[in-house]
Image 1 (tube, helix red, strand yellow):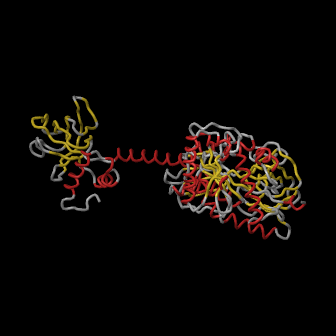
Image 2 (cartoon, rainbow, N blue to C red; image 1 turned 180 degrees about the horizontal axis):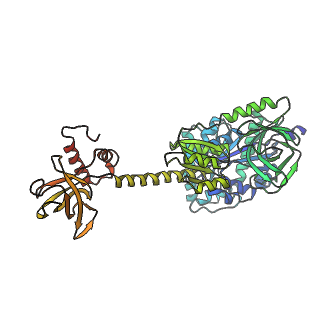
Length: 590
């Protein structure tokens, strides 16, 4: 029995699509409300919650049968939006087991497929929690009951409706190469995926889920996975925090080995790893979530797997997402090199031009980079940490206004950077939700592009043609004043006009509409036009068609860049105009 005290707590990774109920499930287990405090109701970092075996016993009640050797379960709650593939992968790599949570009413989503692909890659055993059975129309909840008990109390048509949705999930799992069935119909859990219908709101099916997880933990930890937590501790830094009386501390998931007060540790940074000695170890109370806990208990020794806080001198340069390892004087140099090499592999390859991005952790930075690259958005600089004055200056140096931008995920901006920002044209977007940042930037691109196209459209001379009306010559010359009808496009003042043979005949000096001076006239208008240069009857004649003489550079822009914005009458006018210009000069304006 003494040997069993050293058993490592199994790590259970909770994965799935955004808003399918991952954090709500853990809330139900621990009776807290972490979900309400999440930015955008989406978990942005890997969190850790330790649930001791006696709590699982209490939640499961009569369903808790048999003797379980494991001391409990450590849940890692991973972000669900598709941008967080990297963080979920890191979570998957740490996990002994996983829960893939699926909204039974929505079924498989892209992130569901992503989750099971990650678990297949790491050969991680998993179960499926078919959540939100309480949302099935007509469902009569039986709070806290086992699923089968609740299911048997439902009317037949409701059971049929649930079965239909349930087997859609089973079918999708089969399509992805997994044999599965409802948990109470499975005998061989090693070769079949257990699907447990649950409600994270009412607690229905929760006891079934926990019992299945404990059974799998017992089975797989005994046969497939490392069973005892001995040797130097290895973990991942979740966050850096300033704690009163302790200075900079690290929130850590210890996923292997053990750590004690006084141990030397190596912690990853953006350059050489920190080598320091642990001054204090603190753990949140059971059922607390390490990121939101305010009161911690001082302890001398921690065995994996666990979420804990570490206090030690000189932790300021540590970065979130970095490895942390217990070392000795003999192993410090070798392990430091391993950590440095591991972080170097996560360095972001950047472009010569592009936007600047900042994030609070390595995982967040990788996730943001992946999302931006999927949108083919170039990145000039990507770093962990708060936004500095240097970042503002570098962004300002970008010639293209599309790239004079900084995206900051869950970071602050220094006072001198804020002051610099007030005096320049750099655009800053800061958010606690990655996909919101990307949406903000793509909206910004669209806004700038539309503004640029509008400015270009207004500056470029567009197609236009008009016909001199019979018996509407008001002055023959200096300037000639004639009544005209615009037969295509738009005519404006201060533009040259030409005849159908391509000869320039003068400049539009003014336009009058019902006696009022106007700067332009459009298709279908009848206006009076004064033309400086020609004499009516000699150079131009009543009934003759004249064209706006578009400069070659402008014609090229209109044909190649603005063509889709032309109205049908403008398009016809452009075609006729180019035909005139390209007679004898086939490459004019190309």
